[in-house]
Length: 572
Image 1 (cartoon, rainbow, N blue to C red):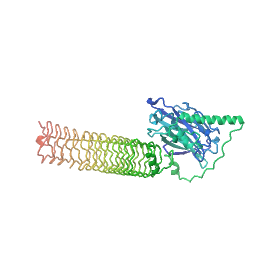
Image 2: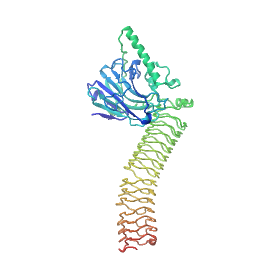
Image 3: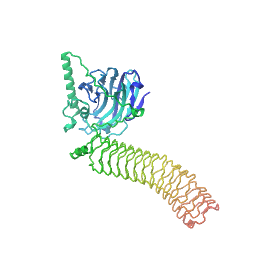
Image 4: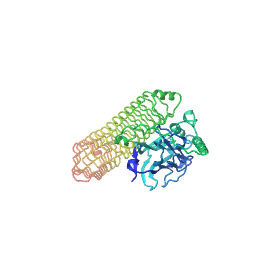
């Protein structure tokens, strides 16, 4: 039975499948119709304990299909996986891996992606899966569900050896960089001199050609001397710190970057020198409070965990997929910023400006968003569970499918927001502004709506049974088909509401403002309407038999044609 991993999770091959040696790593993706000319290639880096390839031949790709120890074999640049949907497959024999190799990294790049303005935003349904190459039984799978935008390279996953055991980790890390960046990262001698840091973009084909030439030259020299290829001497591996089961499951380096942690001073120096692409940069804990970054800056996939960005100006900055867990964003201006898929769990966003920001699938779990401006923001399927949104403004925000369970939304402004499919489990809507919101079909049973503004809201078909509406404003709201079982409407503003055909038999409506309301065909038998405002109310064909209308001074201004009056007579 296959196990499905999420980003950062690990699978212990040696423990779960003992005595298992031969496996296949299949990689797949689907290219959109608008990018059918995308040339996507899988590459494999076999690394020593120092995190580098010990020799060019341990860089396996379509022009160097087999590692020198014979342990890794690339299927080539073609769709020949054992199962439909696999695009490229790498076959690994664990028993043959040279002892110096401690890690195998699986990378997928878009050929000339940067030059052609192609990226993984045009690629969907990407996955990596491990299966038994002899039985074809799938062992583990990782679907890269996160949203990518400008990334032209993805690190899908890695096999690594720890305490003598082989394990697989789901990585899913994207980079706005070519294959050269990985060569710079993993190659020990910098044989390709035109690196990404040399000031220009390097064609992936040139990178691969140079590697191919060096490998071919080495093989010719070895053949001429009739000497067997000798494996490098194993490099001793530092002992790992013993991890708990939970630590073994969670990957502390899931957001591993192409460069180490850099200081605020170094970042700002690079910025002042004109650099604007900081994709994947590691700025964990950096202090950039009060700084201003231009709108063309990319911090996509950057690690900004626990960073101090208070009062910073990051208008329209690209923060797609960035890690801002625990960051201080108090009063930060993120207007129109791109935070799709960003991790903001536990972050402090008090009084932050997120007007019109793209926050699709962003994680705000337990974040502080009190008094934040989220007007017109796109929060589709965002995770806001247990977040503090007290007095935040989300006017006209799109919250389709968002999770607001256990969130604190006291006095939040949600006027004209889209709450379709929102999870409101355990939420109190006390004092919330829901003016003009479409709540049709939602189950609000037992929710506290004390003092809530629901004017012009669409509540058709909503279950309001047992709801506390004390002091709520429902003027001109659509209450067609609403379940009001056990609801007290005393003190509720029902001016202009639609209660046509509603069962209000025995309801206490004394003193309620029903000016201009539509109560046609409503059942008001034995209802208490003492002192109610029925001016211009539509009571046509309503049943008022036994109703108490004492103190009602403007009944003559109501529409009563066909209504059954308290004494049982039908009004003409």
